Image (cartoon, rainbow, N blue to C red):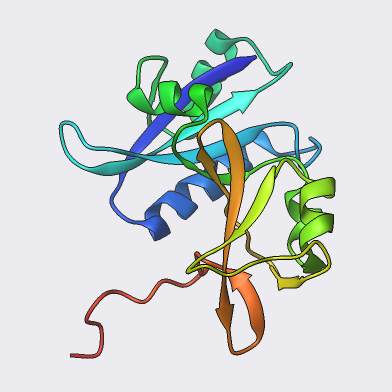
Length: 178
């Protein structure tokens, strides 16, 4: 497996998502959607920022991939030495932006279908929400599970439309209305 970290000094989730899309542009052409896993992690030193970790089973050699990213993403710092890599390998932290089964679950689906049709090990409800396998989830176009305690967990919450992902695609900045 080829594993490396890509740092573009992304300071918020929008910046992290932009980095993921840029990686897709470089890596995705002609490849299956789940050829690689990309997770984003908060790295605090020397300054807080989001770093993407790319895990690519059967992917190009590290040297080849590093050269490709250096050529196509000249503002990125590519490294094999990041605390984000250790988190991803241990499955203790990070949010998955690209993963096996992502496109098949980013729809209106059920808890059971998410757990059976993707890398997600468990769907968990926030605030004490009990979930049943047949519960309907609206993950239309956006589902970002997290690594936690060695497992891939998708957090969901109640909304007017039913159960939705805890993380929304479009974040509203704190205190945006005053």
